[in-house]
Length: 222
Image (cartoon, rainbow, N blue to C red; front, top):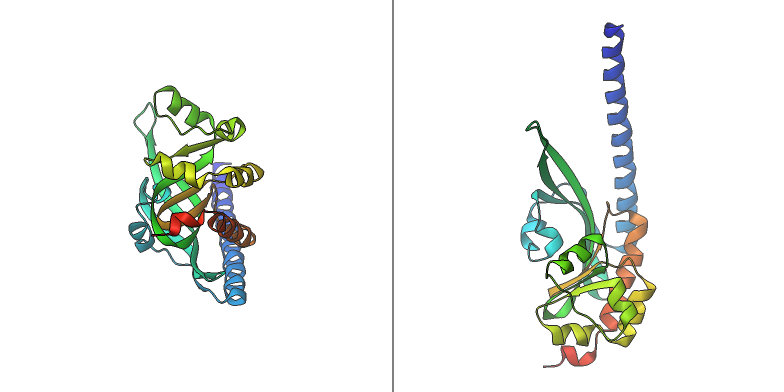
């Protein structure tokens, strides 16, 4: 019986590998088609330079073995834009001292805007953020109680945060309650909690464009 289980186990592993390979090939084909249709460049290979170049973004500055894959570059409504899936690893150890590697994937879509700004993060309120607030890591509260309850907003420059999160912006974000947004320097980025898929990129790019257009003009004046 044991002799039969060994070949069966090998066959299962091979089958999983083949399925994963086919899914990866389909993903590459979809990304290639999207890039060609929109006049963007596309590279499926692992790129570690991206994480170093954009390490000032919180989501790209965690874990180890960091790299981007399925990277696209181009322009969206006359602004430089970029999209990729970001990978990083964390580790845990069980009671027996066995170390386990955890692989994390984050979809990243970003837009380069015309001016450098202080860091600002906006994310849906969650269990971990409530714990953080309980131990003193407060976020910024706004006049809109509904917005303050549904989003965690953090920035060292509170005035800028209030200027950014004006009434219309808060209403827009409340209509898009899953938005995880970061603005730092001249990069406006949206994050997805999983691998980025081709059908997701245009809605994210349009969302970034809308957010940029609704930033007050006086923020860009000298």
